[in-house]
Image (tube, rainbow, N blue to C red; front, side, top):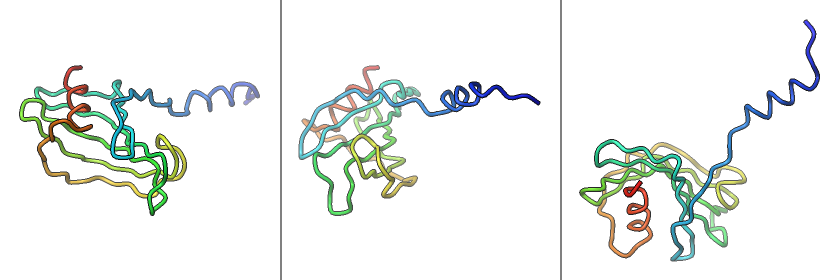
Length: 125
């Protein structure tokens, strides 16, 4: 079977994951929050979204950014994190310091916080 040399690089290029298009929410407490609007999924009052918290300087574990799969209950105004990964560079780049599924329990979203801004942005979609 004859393989065209230019076909293999093209196939590899299309198999790479697309980069996320992060929307800036706001900043505070030493980090900036972003959500990936294209990942918002709604099921009644429940909204799921990917979020990133990005810090200017790494913490004591070498973490620059946290990526989370967050669920918001738009009516009850509460949230839980069901997946979390920590990364050694900005915006989930670099190596993964830790990651895993979480059995996040529901917590109320505090007023006047980045969490409230994130929830409002996700719930308005």
